[in-house]
Image 1 (cartoon, rainbow, N blue to C red):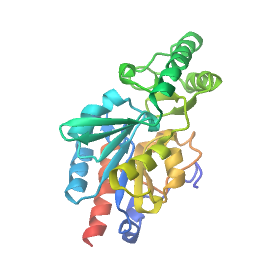
Image 2 (cartoon, one colour; image 1 turned 90 degrees about the vertical axis):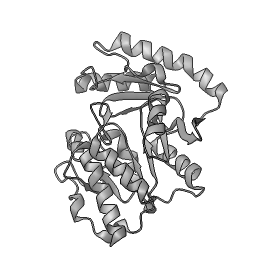
Image 3 (spheres, rainbow, N blue to C red; image 1 turned 180 degrees about the vertical axis):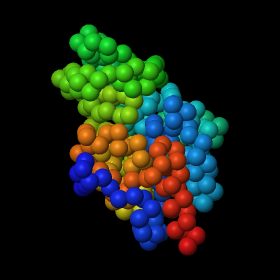
Length: 268
């Protein structure tokens, strides 16, 4: 993988032949499809263009199920995987179907441990606050570090340390520190969602992935045609795994570059 001193080549240099093998797009949400918490218009236009071309898009996010539900209704996506692989949301007629990576008994047992960890974070890390979307979370906790609050890197590291001391998996997105119990991840969520949507196992060589931060590294490592939108460079000093390519535009404009490259290759 490229080093921080040598970021990926620009997406515009990717050969069209790479895109012709792609069946669908997996994507992060915050600061990849969105800007300031709302869908970026270029990204929404790109989602519609992909849907019109029968290219499925599956969004994979650390956002909660409650936050994701209106967007799985409104956006032209095949599914949303929320809470870093914990919950799968799909349209089911006029309703939204929720499936869980863990059974109800496991989720119920985990709730007390998650609550205890959240209390410890707030007590031990000065300035830490739970994410404002916490009420919609069913399988994890999230601490705000860049959405409505600001935590310095040392504070973010301290939050991660408390979560891991309590036995949680912890990842840092562009806005939140997410913590959860269980083995699910963005990667396992992607595998789950692709099989649920298409009936076939995920072949990472036939899907693209688009992301923007350190919590996308597991996907960058596993998906050959992985792309970072330009604002990924804000995390350059913390990345251990880079995507194969990087866009010129940030956020939704970067996602739109991915969609345009894929659709141009199909037309060609």
